[in-house]
Structure formats: structure tokens, C-alpha cells
Image (cartoon, rainbow, N blue to C red; front, side):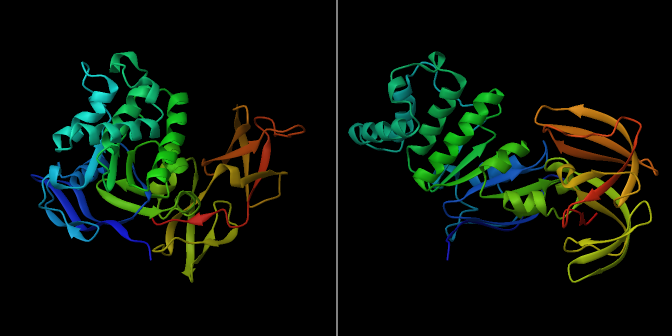
Length: 355
């Protein structure tokens, strides 16, 4: 059985009358790349700071490898943090920046120097050991901050949006480096981001957070393919949310009436009930058919060329817009704007959500 690195139980964080985190429970596994994902102000950084010890909790418990750490000060927790702002000492070279924390912990200079050599090699900065931060690129400075955090061999490394200051191409490269470093070190990484692509491409598991509440926890595939509610479906990637009337929910499936009156059966999220509801279906899982065919009928209103694919918007009779993503290939046939088109869903693609 995989050991649990961090176990958060019924944890609440209040700032006066404002509740930043509401009854959060999470189990993060040893040697896991775990991501806290959500929009700005959702509570994900606050949650990270409670693990680090920078914020006290109002209720509940936080355990690290079975030890209750809620009352431990930050410097007594075997945890390190990489912040959005790297906070490197500008007058110290790379080696001294990384060594500084080790010396503060009481290591002798020879032992600390050997460890610095190890971590600089790990983050591929050995050739920059004598440079000042001002002589490094943004990506290199990020790796210095990472090396400094890894040097004391923490059990858990917390990363608070550490890639947000980098440009897109550099972010993509550093993502791969972070994944590789996590796998090589075996340290549990807890990563905070508002970027869905970062979360989907890097994580073993993701916790989606909104308004201080954990909405869903699962693998990238779980979160994307089987969202539990409207927030998760809409926040992760693109989706079509279709208004339906739910006549029955049983054994994980729902029977619905689509906007055009068609009866339709699909998987249902746990907690979904009969009544008004919403189906989620991803644009790439909808196909265009001939007029009069398919589950829905509408009029094409817009086409957007995106290189690898084409987005086609189809307006239903009730005014709802369904977006279809069509792979760009030779012989691709798209109805002209203003033409009638049918819409079909791939098997299992539509899912009834919890509102």
C-alpha cells in the first residue's frame, strides 16, 4: 500500500468572518506530483501555506507522514516552498544562494558544498555555479530557487505558481524538467496553478478548488473525461453545457430529454438527480452530420480556423450554441455559415452533471 505523505482532515481556515477554506479533506500520496488547481482567490495558495506552516488552521488536522504538524512552526516542518517570486540573494552567486540555507541549518561547509554540487547537477546548472542571479535567464533563476529548496532534502516540496513569470515556450520546457526532477528525487511535490494545461500535463492527480471547497480529486483523465459538476467541466478545458430535462437517474445512468425533444441516455455523475440538468460534452466528441440526422439540429453561425483543427459553432432552436472541434485534415468538409447541420455525440461522451 502506498504511504500517505499529507493527510488533511476536515480543515477550515477563517480570516475573521471570511471562510477561505471550507472543511477540506485531502490525502496526498508519497512520491506523488499533486496539483491544486483553481481560479485566482479560490483558496489554493492558502491551502499550500497551511501545509507549509505560514498560516494556522481554524479547525481540523494536518498530518505529515502520520505526524500531526498543525502546531509545528514552519522551520520545524520537513517541507520547503518554491514561491512565485524566487527571492534569490542578488549579491550572491548561484552556489552561495543554494548553500546559504544549508549553512543556516548547521551543516558544515564541506558537507553543504557536496550537496550543492549534487543539486546543481540535478537541475542542470553546474556550469552557472559562479554566476549572479542578474546574469541568468528567468528559467535559470527558477531552477536556482528549485535547487535551493531541494538542497535540505525535504520530504515534501511545495510549489506556488513557480512558472507564472516565464513565457509560454519556457514554461513548457520547465514543466518537463520539473516532472523529471520529481521522478528522480522521489520527493512529494504539491504544485499550485490556475493553468489547466499545466495541471493536466504534469500531475499524477489534481484537486480542483473553487470558493474554498475541493470540487473533485482525480487523475487528469478522470477530471477531464468525467467531471462531477458544472464548475469542473467548464473550468477544465472547453465543454458544451446543454440544458436538458432529466426524467430518471439510476445505477449511474440518466435518461434525459434533449432541447429538440430527443430522448437520450448517458452516464451520470454521482449525486445527479431528476429535474432540470446539464449535459457536458467536449467539442472534440461532437460530430457534424447531415441535416435531419443526429441527436440535435441547428444552424452553423461561426467557423474559427486554429491550424490543427477548426471550431464550428452551431446554434440550436432554443438559442444554445454548441461548439464542434473538427480535426484539420485533407478533404475536411464543413457546412457553410448559415447552413443547417445535425449534431451527434460519440458514445459515452455526454455526461449528466451535478449542478
